[in-house]
Image 1: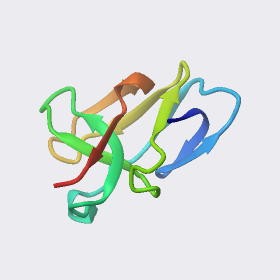
Image 2: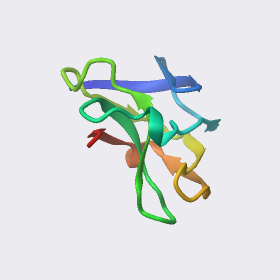
Image 3: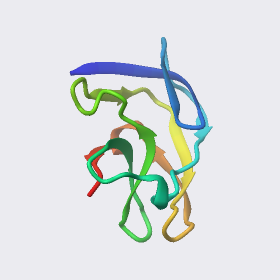
Image 4: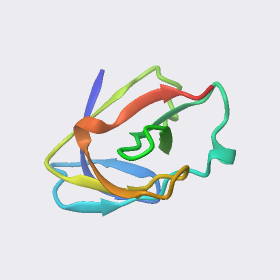
Amino acid sequence: MTKFVLAACKGGNMAQGSGFQGTYKVTAKNPAEVKPGDWYYGFDCLVCGRRFAVFDDTTSATKPVTFAGGGVFRVACPHCSADRMYQTDQVQHFQAT
């Protein structure tokens, strides 16, 4: 398993770097864009509990990424619109159904 320490995050792109600090505003994927069978990184909504995608897993789960660092992602759930903060240990790796 690969371990990434995120240095920057914009619009669903992730970069390897020396540290992930601060708050990063990211945008959840529209559920209509999430394709069954494809792999993603995202979160379980803290309000409605539904899982949503933020980043594509371009390796199709062949090289899973571990997110680390003290930073947080700020993102609105595409299902209930709740805008919340998520820590790196809350990132979920999943295959869309």
